[in-house]
Image (tube, rainbow, N blue to C red; front, top):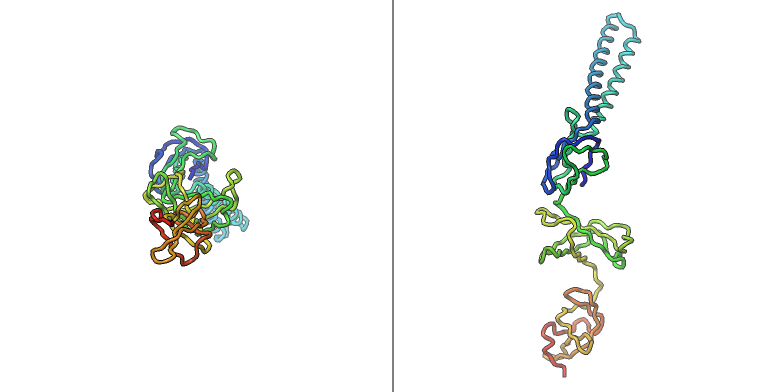
Amino acid sequence: MPILAPVTGRIMALNVVPGQHVKHGQPLATLLAGDTAQATTDEEKARAGLVMAQAAMARAQQVKQAGGAATRDVEAARAALVQAQAEERRAQDRLASFDDNAVAGGKLILRSPVDGVVSAVSMAPGQNVTDITAPLLSVEDLSEIWAVADVPEADVDQIHIGQSVSLTLPARDGVVLYGEIATVEPDLRPETRRLRAMIPLPNPDEDLHPNMFATVNIQLKQPPGLMVPQSALLMNNDNVTVFVETAPWTFKRRKVGISYDEGEDTRVLSGLSAGDRIVTRGGVLLNDD
């Protein structure tokens, strides 16, 4: 999350360094800003003017009640009071635009908007801030990391919000993370022809870091079919075969058609029927002569 200065000014103090953990509302830096000083002064002048207008109104009403003032004098005092009230509200709104970070002397304190880690600092004490659109520093909330899955164009119709996924990371050998798709971008990326699906992952220990590589496995609904373990499959003269039990302790080799992208289990497209008993392990030791 980039932190920007709301006004131009000069950096008086920098309280954090990259990698430092910060809390919500913690001071990050102090900026000396002429606009802040002007807003503070304007509010003080408006408050003083309001006090004087209130006192003048009270005197005009007392004099009128005593018979010593005309109605127009009271009306003039009332108009001056309304103007003073409007000026005080304007000055207060201007000062409030700096949140609660403006302090005496024209100083403005930049505070962290979230609990997180300072990921970048682009300022130093004494630096003049002239571009209020340029981030001065960044704070990242690492309590939750979002994984981004690039889904090929041919598979986008099978992706939807709420779908369960599992993730593996090259940097975390043996660790499997689980989550659900929270959002799906509506447009394909023109340069990759991929659709992005986002998965939030809790990260209380901050073991996950932005820009890490991951493999996302999305669980898709499969049509009804026969699945066999890959250990049951044998190659025979460029054909994929399995041994089918034809009688007790009698097996016969049979050619099957399979799908090649089903993970540990393989979908059988042809050659087997529901209820067929096959050898799932050690079939290479059998002889079908």
